[in-house]
Image 1: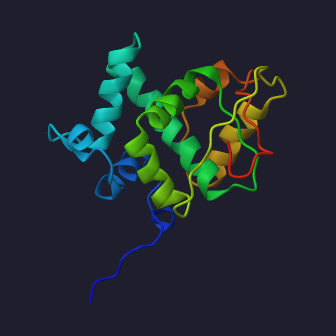
Image 2: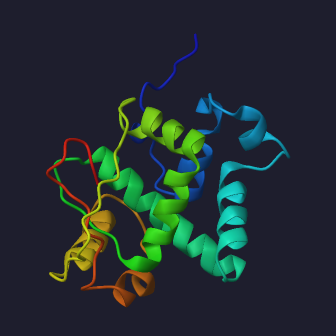
Length: 166
């Protein structure tokens, strides 16, 4: 008997690398582009960050890991308003820009619903970023305190009022 999970959010691990790689089998679009080259999704997203931003691999992995935590936290808990700082937002944008991967994340962790990105122009300066890090810790993630503290009071201006947005 084979059991399958309808929603990968129910997995026990809170390792962002494992959670991202777990959606690889859900990639449905542009599979030649995304899955060509025998890379894991984690390695692909890190390589794209390194291609487009000036940083070392360690920093790209830290940013991506926290972006995955944030993204999955938003998808698993749409009732909680979360926000991300400029640095971690680089990783969130990387995930969104790689649309086949973003769609697979939505399929797995957002019950198949597309998660919109609806930013405001002005950044929030009310400590939401630090509260988000605390929330992510409360749901089992090991956040990178330094990355969240860098932008602690200067959060992304995403709209929590738009249905299924972050």
